[in-house]
Length: 71
Image (cartoon, rainbow, N blue to C red):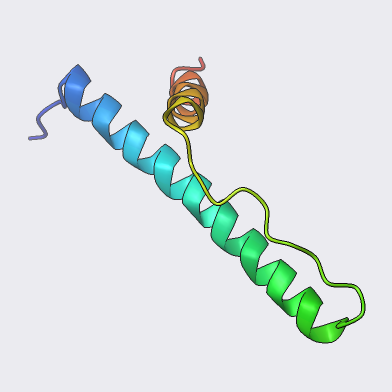
C-alpha cells in the first residue's frame, strides 16, 4: 500500500529538483568553459552567471509540474 504525498511535499520535491537541475546546468557549463580554456589558451571564455535565482527555480519547477500533469 502506498500513501499519497501532500501538495506541500510534491511542491517541495519539484523545487528541489528544479534547483538541482539549474545548479547542474551551471556546473556543466563551467566544466565546458574550463575544458575550452585549457585547450584554447588564446581564446579564453569567462564563466557565465553563477547564481540560481528564486524566480528561475520557481519557473523551472512550474515547467516540471506542467510536464507531470500532462494527460
